[in-house]
Length: 269
Image (cartoon, rainbow, N blue to C red):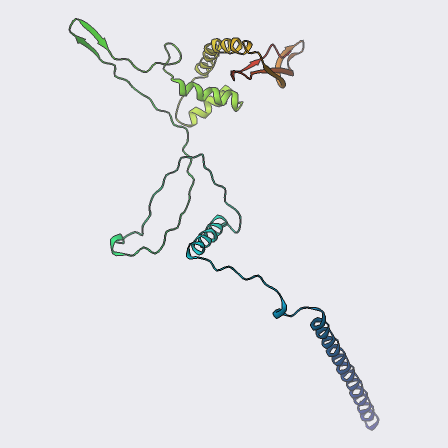
């Protein structure tokens, strides 16, 4: 027991010496770091100018109008980047409606307005179809019979006006929608259109524009200075194996003097 006790005391003494040595090393390190920090402060004071020595331009005093303009500009920047710093896109080509919204169940005249904020919501109205019924009256005025006239339609004996035909042509040729899809699109928006009727409207419209196409060609040919260019588009053709496709060329001719443009297409050649 005595030998074991002496061994523990020896171990404790060694640990105390080790701890004392570590404390001494830590003190020396702190002193070294303090000296380094003092030297750095001396270097900064020597080579870097003091705040009082910096030449800062004197700010020109602002008028009240300039202060108000700067404040409005700051508010506009904050409002424009209100979506987590992302700039919101403005759609200027859409119909705009404005409406004042006041607190519910509150007498507006009894309160004092302290601010107005703008909240924007974009609304989309699906395509709508309107059925116009014109009650055309016929009157006997003396010996003459006078009858009213309903608005004329682009196609003879047709119940579809120009906006309806233009809508079908836009979907078919500008957005490349097949007639079957156009019919389903119309049905989904409340108008049951037969596929044969849609094909007939497009075909009759093409014949109607044939005269305009010829007139544009004559007008362009009368110009003395023409600009021409070509482009290509994949067109469907019939070959020996059935239906196929090829690169078809379209020529555009513009008359610089009068302004008309003529597109020439001859079987894609």
